[in-house]
Length: 231
Image (tube, rainbow, N blue to C red; front, side):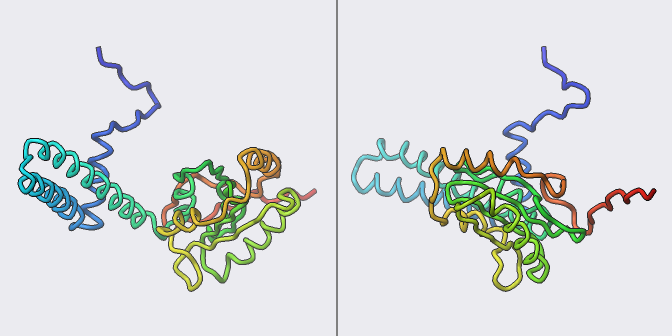
């Protein structure tokens, strides 16, 4: 008997459905992506089979050719799919937070620790390098947000390195599709116990704002907070 989804709870899409979604995104963002994947897999298959013919052991190299072609296709498909997803979310508020939340390596991400009504925001990521503040928004506006947030957490962070990164398309900023690579190049300054202790100190700090998770549609603005009551 198949189980029905509980009312109000949306089931996670299955693996095949996820692949269909990724394929659809690839076709929309880069029509040449799938033909490139197929060509690379077939090319790998042909090369390995040819080697088998040359050495006179085709029976051994055919299975290897199939495995190699499959591996090349999967790896290339994953890289192109990731690039396509970056293109889809690029320019949307919250795009950098989406990248941070999908990073591996023991990062703890706190979204939108600072921001303004223009949806410029600063996210905090804590990991082996230390504290990384990642801003989203024009360079002319996010500098003040980064400076204020760095000053706010400096006492709790103590002597831990604090890095600030501006994500965007302005001069001196890092495009969202290169954010993950940039973070992976940072030096490992802390041990895992030190990262856990640092997280505890920073999590105790009060949040200055609350933001929805994930990319936010273009044109959205921060809601106005409640006006103070006058007596």
